[in-house]
Every structure is written in C-alpha cells, then in structure tokens.
Image (tube, rainbow, N blue to C red; front, side, top):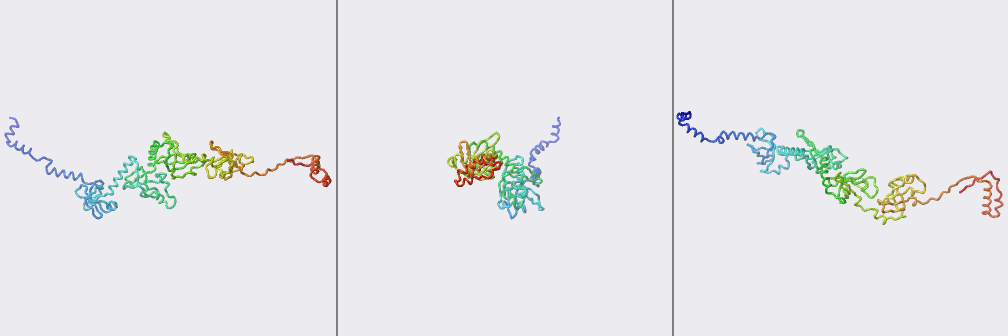
Length: 443
C-alpha cells in the first residue's frame, strides 16, 4: 500500500477539506488586501512639498479658493497667494482647472497651495528649455533701472543688461536727467531675445537682445539674398554711417550705399545726405551671395543732373559757385543750388603766374564764375574766374640804363623844335652846363 492510499484510509475527510479550500475567496478580494491596497495608494498619492499638481476649483470664497487635487481633502489657496493672482482671481470660476504648487499643511491640517508658484515653476522650466534650445522669443519691457531693462517670461523676471541691448534699443536711451530713467523710452516695447544665463538657486535669469538680433539678421539675410534681384527698389532704414558710406537695414539684413552712390554731387561724408534712423528708398545694385553682401544706391533713384545741363547752362554764362576742393592743377567748384561740379583750371584762376590754387581761392569760398566749356558726354564743365574778374590796368615796367650826353641833347632839341613855338625855341636852346652823362628811361 502506498503512502497516499494510507493517508486516504486514515483521513476519510481529506478530499472534502481540499475541496473546501479550493472554493475559498480569491486573495485579491480579501478585506485585508483591499485595505492594504488603499493604504498604499494613499501613501503614493500623498502630496509632498514642492509637488506640482493639477487641480479643479471646487469653491470660491472671499479671498480664498478650494482646490481638489485628488487627495483626501481639498487644498486651500488663501492670503498673499490670492493677492499675487491679482486679476486672475476675479476671473476664476468653479470648475476651472489650474496648476498648483504644494506648500505645506497648516496647524489645522489644511493643505496650503499656491497657483502663482506653480506658474513660476512652469515658467522656469520653459526658460530652461529656451536656454537649452537657444530658441528666440519676444517679450515686452515691464521695468527698467540704470543697468538695463526687465522682461518677464511668464511670472519669472528676466534682466537684459544695457550691454546686451541692440544698437537700435541703445539709441533710445535718455542721456540727460536721472540715470535711473535712461531706459524709460523702452517701456512696453516688444524685444526679440534669447536666454544666455540661468541660475534657479540665485533666482537669476539673464536675457540678450543683441545675440538674438544678430542671429535673426543672419537668418533674414539668407532669405533676402535669395529673394533680392538687381535693379529692384526696396525700402530700408539707415542703421549706421561710416566714412566710406551708409548701411541700410532692409528688414534684418544690412546693405551698403557707397559714398559715390549717395549723391550725384561730390560729398565728403554720408551725413551730408542721410541720417541714422531715416527711412529711404534704395535700388539694389548687386547681390553677392557667396560673400553675403548687398550693394545699394540712392542716387540712381534721383534725376541725373547732367541730362538737363544743356537746358539750364550755356557757355559764357556767369554762375555762382562754391569751391569744394583744391588740387595742384586747379580748383573744383559746385554750382549754387545744384550738384554739378566744374573745374577751374589753375590757368583760369588769375592772370598772374601761381604755383597752387590756394594762392587765389580757399575751400568754401563763394565765387562768380564763367562757364567756358560743357562736355555732357564726359560730364565735365570748365569754369573760369579770371574771365569774370575786371581786368586791371596794365602796369608799366621801366628798364633804366645810362645814355650818352650827345644823344640826350639831340633828343631834347628835336622835341623842343616840334612842340614849342618859335618864340620859345631860343629860350629852350639855352642849355644848362652838361654833366658827364644822363639817364634815359626806356619804355
């Protein structure tokens, strides 16, 4: 007999007990198991200080909000936390979903929550993402001090130092008055920026408009270089001036108007024609996509003065002009109320012999000049000063030399005979005692 058979004989109720155990309730439905599961869920879902939860407004009272965050009891937003919401508290209604920041429990066991801190935490997280991605964003200036301006990212205050403002924004500063008010003109201005530094522990968020503008212009320049065509006309703003020309912002990219393309006349500096911040129409001369340069012209949109010169001026005409430049071979003069320049050759300055025009004229001097030559093909005009100035009486030069006495006496006698009457000849013939020699003036 086997052991199993022996057990069955000895315990006839073994099969019954086994069947009873098999028919018992599952362990998952046991009351103790359900109690333990409920305790575990409650422990896991218990709010911790610093948690960000999403809740629903279940009640709104004077200066207080009740928020259901799925805990055993509602949380409370009250006191200064309500004041920080400002107008948002007035607009909240029962059923609104809001993010909340878990602060702590008070003495009565109420769970204190903060909506403003929850938003700030979300804004800090957004700022961190902007720092990591280096994406650009726009924000409005909400404050300022002597060191720069303040721009908010949501609830977080970011600072833009003066050194990180663009040249356009820096040109708006007030140099007179209180230093703290120097950036007053930038209030409520929309700026394009990037996050360049962030430190949560020190509550530090540094922004830069200059870096953002540099990158934005680079992107815009790429687009402009692809879309611009030669001889096209576009509008821009003068962004800066240099001795060799003016830079014009065409909407993110700068083009250069060379000094020679600013005016049909001769100028020494771009400030004589344009000023920073001025809106102007320009013509695209060339686009260098490899070197990423744009050449512009202002004068090509203006009438060509030489085309109407034959209708306005004629050879022999006397005009008013101002001396603009002196060179060793003459002086350039710009005609009054015109951009036409002509050359006064050194030989046309005076009848006298000179070695440099500065002996007769100076730069900036106004003169009456006579037109002596017009060449519209070569765009040249010859002017003369000496042909306008009244001619002076010729001075007589004398060459003094000694003359023999006999020649002088004969000359004197002939002159007396021809000019004096007969009665005076005898008197004139009485000559004073001669000297060794006399001096004759030879003209």
